[in-house]
Length: 232
Image (cartoon, rainbow, N blue to C red; front, side, top):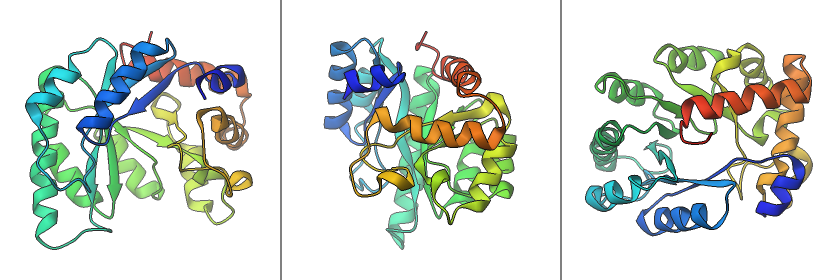
C-alpha cells in the first residue's frame, strides 16, 4: 500500500492509532517505512480509560506527529457514556499539550460539546478529521484555530453543502485524507479505500477550488508540515 501511494504521488502518510495496541503498531510502521509517520490515539468509542502513561511514552517517539484519533461520538453511544467521553477527551487534550503535539478529532453529533472542551485548553491545536458539516460549523472550528480535513465524501452527489465548505475553506487550513479503509470516493464505493486513492479526493477538491492539482499538492504539503511539524 505504501509503494502504491508513493507511485500515485502520495508521499507523506500518517498511520493513526485508535487504541494503545494499534497506536504501538502505527509507531512500528512509521519506523519501517520512511513515508509513514504515526498517531497515538484513543477512539471515543473505546470506553475503557485511556492509559495516559503508556500513550505518553509512545508519543515521545520521534515519528509520532499527532495525538489521534480522539474526540467525541454521541451518535453511536449516548447516556452516561457521553460524560465519560468528555472526561477522556479532557485527559487526552492535557496529554497533547504536555507533549506539544496537535490532535486529530473525531466528531459525530457532538460539535457543541467539542467546542466547549477545546475552549478549556488554551493553545490546543489540530484538525477536524473527516470533516462532514456545513459552513456554519466549519467557521466555528476555523475560528478556534483548527484545520479541516476532507476525504472522499466530497465526491458524493448528495454532499453539495460539504463541497461549499471545500470552496470556502482558507487555503492554509485545508487538509486531505483517506480514512482508509473507509472514506472512499463515489467511484470506488464497492472496494476498501487506501492511501493511493487520495488522488480521487484531491482531483475533486482542486476542481472545486479552481486550481491545478500541482497547486493543491504544494499547499497540502505545506499545511501538513505546518501542523504536523515533524513531517519535513
